[in-house]
Length: 82
Ligand SMILES: [Zn+2]
Image (cartoon, rainbow, N blue to C red; front, side, top):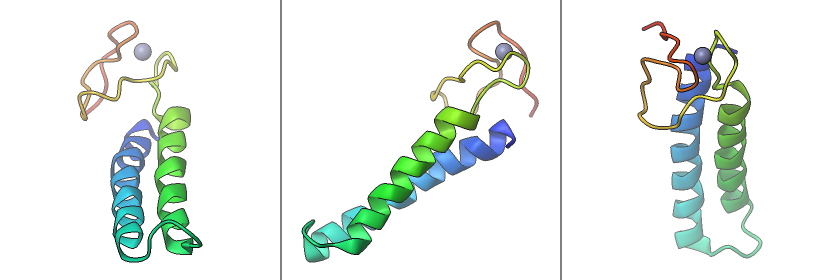
């Protein structure tokens, strides 16, 4: 997986997951709430995908989660495309 794709999934997936779980938690509470669990799973899975795939293509080190769009790898300053 491309690190840019992983970054998008990490960013939007976590937000979407939190929104889904938040909405259904407000409506139904957290007990026996299947849709709340789905939201949490989506957020967690997106976060894990970010941890696994959001890495520098040059040295493989985990990229910083801030700022959203990195220009340089935080390990050795490798230039990142785009
Ligand atoms: Zn690097």
